[in-house]
Image: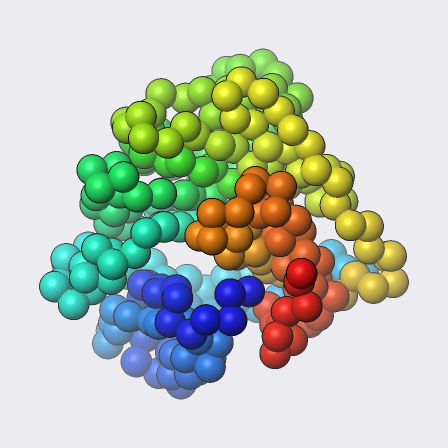
Length: 268
């Protein structure tokens, strides 16, 4: 979205195998600076996908994706990337792997007035990794999620509401570790409007409708939304522009097989 090679750095864990090499190659081609922890004892994570009529079913073999260690993050060359970054995004899935790595970055971001963002990622994270999620939530400036995750978060915390707007407000009002930034909650709802809560208020933004026959594969839709959103946030664009870019990116990815993109975006 930025068309600026090296603007984004990514840290994670892969195995020393052909899939790991493929990951590195494709990230480099996409202009992403990757600094992987390469685990010699386990293969790179893979995921089998079955798509039928636009709906998907996934079977993941997490393997190396489950093996990241905070020692790798603490290495000077890798921590230098953290110090250089102005914005951070960590998927909620990582709470199952290395919560101490998340906490390191979260606390650093709060101490240095940098923007820290996370995703609810999946209902099971809200249910079964509640403690780790609650520990990091005070540091999160932007919380992303979809309507199912938001409703699960509400249920887990006994809020007794399924109203996504109410839930978004409640998440945005969760206590914060630092007062530098107010928390903003961004909840996507498939083809229904995106809900954004801040300062006790809610705004909704319509999604560009996509004819059913153009829907190919919903894989990556949520991640694409965040990527598009962040591409404008780092340029200090207003929230409505961030949402518009997020909707654009997810609209593109669901019309293609797998998590792929055209060479250049035509977002204006």
